[in-house]
Structure formats: C-alpha cells, structure tokens
Length: 67
Image 1 (spheres, helix red, strand yellow):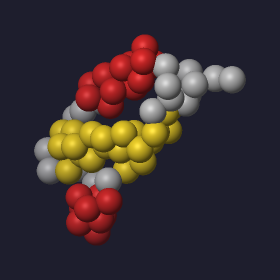
Image 2: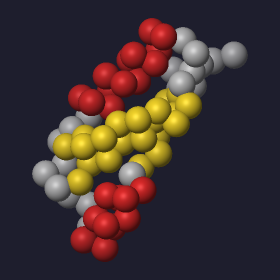
Image 3: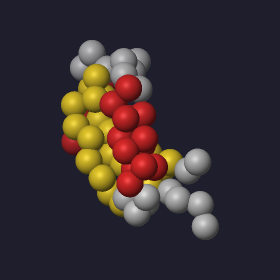
Image 4: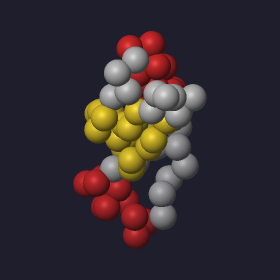
C-alpha cells in the first residue's frame, strides 16, 4: 500500500506558511519529512481572494500527499 499523509497549511497575508500541522501522518518517517519540507517550501502563495481570507485564516487548507 502506498503511503499517504494529510497536512494542514495556511498561507495568508504575504503568502507564507503561517502554520503547518499534521492531520494524519503516513507512518513512514522519510515520506512524512518530505511532506513537511514540501509544505514549508511551497511559499510564497498568491494572495487568496478577499472573500476567502477570513475563512482560510481560521480553517486553513487541507492537503493530501501521495507518492
């Protein structure tokens, strides 16, 4: 079975990752570290539309990773 991981990332304001937390790790430390690194290196993000800024700042964005 292929590993998969779920992480939250929030990129508000200038588009930086302001918070990154696990929702579910894959159980494979090498894969999980690569996911964490990818989330951190993904910035800068484009500014979200104004009507989404508040929701994204509160809820964040769920991302699912698979190799």
